[in-house]
Structures are given as C-alpha cells and as structure tokens.
Length: 311
View 1 (tube, rainbow, N blue to C red):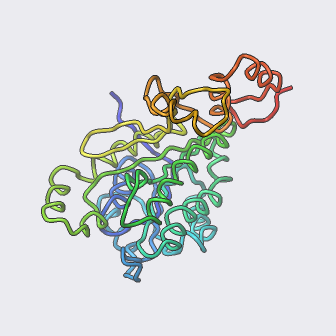
View 2 (cartoon, rainbow, N blue to C red; view 1 turned 60 degrees about the horizontal axis):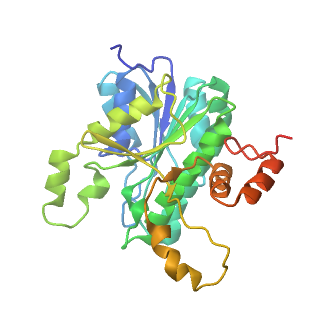
C-alpha cells in the first residue's frame, strides 16, 4: 500500500501546545510532506493564561525535518489574522484541524471549543474552496454524551457534531469535506483528571499517535468520507451517529395514549440515521400515514442536499 502523503499541501492546526494531540497531528502531517501552521493562545484548563506553545511546537516539528510556522492568537477574536498568516506563509490552505480548547466557565468553553471552531472555519472557507479539495477536522469529545461536571464543555462538544454535518452539506458542492472525531488519548487535559490510576492507564493504552493516524487518514485527499463522526483511541475506531427508533404512531392526540405506547417508542428496532434536517423529516414522514406521505411528496423537497425546493 502506498503511503498517504500530503506533499505540497498546507494545514492549519489550532490549539497546538507542547504536549498532546495538536502537536501530534502537526508532527504526523509534517512528516508526510505537509507544511503546517500551528496556533496556540496559551490557556490552561482552569481558564488561566499560560505560555503559548507555538514557538516550541515549531522547533519540534523542524527538528523532525518538517516545515512549520507558528501564529499565536485567539481563535475567537483573531481567526482572520490566524488564517491570513497561513496564506501569507505558504500561499494556500488545504486542511484545517479545529483542535483549540480551554477550561473555564460555560461561556468560555462554548466560545473556545465551538465559536472558535466556527470562526476559524469561516475565515478558512474561501481558501479551502479554492483548492477544490479542502478538508476540515473538528475535534469533539465523548463529553458530548454528557459531562456532569462540565455542562459548557458537553454543550460545546455536542454542538460540534451538528456543525460538522452542516459544514459537510455546505461543502458538498464546492469540494470541501468536514468530519469530526471524539478522541481518547493521553493529553494535557486527560493528564489533569484527578482519578487514581487514570493517568497511567491513558498513557499506556491511549497514545496520541493512535488518534493522529486516523485523523490523517480522514484528512487525506483520497478519502471521500464527509459529515461523519468517529470515536477514536488506542487503535479502535467506531462510527458515531444520531439515530431514531421506528417509534409509534397514533391518531389519538391525548397525553394518556402515550402511556401505552412509550415502550414502543423506546424500543431500538431498526434505527434510522439521517444526514440532514430534511433527510430526517423525510424519514419521519415516511413512517406516518399514506396521505401524509403523499402530501409531503407533492412538496418535492430534496432531503439529501440542503432542502431547496426542486420544483
């Protein structure tokens, strides 16, 4: 099998400190011919300021024989400048990895993890489109399944999944792909979890290189997947979907009716996975009455693209 190379391509990776996944992504891509732009602001998981890791990250990448430049800046308020630095340095942008993260209160978590990812992507979008094969990787978390101690983190990482699917829809016509991963790895953030034995367990079984390998696969120009989400760690990869059960249908619109039907609603059955809001509505209507379905068909909405009326 030929190696997956990134020669002549440029990647921007946010949130690149001197320890963790951001640096691992950057080093792997650089080792395969990609010119990388690494970004960091300098913020710890308590929300406090730290020394940005950009200069040291560039030094480590260059020591490996790679090509890199660093840009210190805030992904929320300085997205345009960060992206422009990449263009000024290398003249193009093929790949964006939205990896920046921080701790803090609810607003800070949403600002950095979600709004920052959106701002960077918006700034990069014209350049990614210009290549005809732009690629975005958004970093979510298993916190999206629920994080009792960090509701802001859970909300932001959960929203990343919907953002990714929407980017994939918007990018379909212009050659821009977007996917997301929920990584499990030994990083600066997992190292800070105060659970006896947890750090040692993660260090042994979940090296960041295992996550970076799959990330590079998703970001390669020959990979066609888009709008997908995966959990990744320790050599295991699983697809994550938002799915619906077959459900229950009734003409009796009273609260009491659902007491007898709720078990049917909850039964897994053959679940349906939808790729957009219009695809979900199309699937939902298909499980209703024939007349409802016929009326829906008369509208002629395209459920697999962006919902524009085709008639």
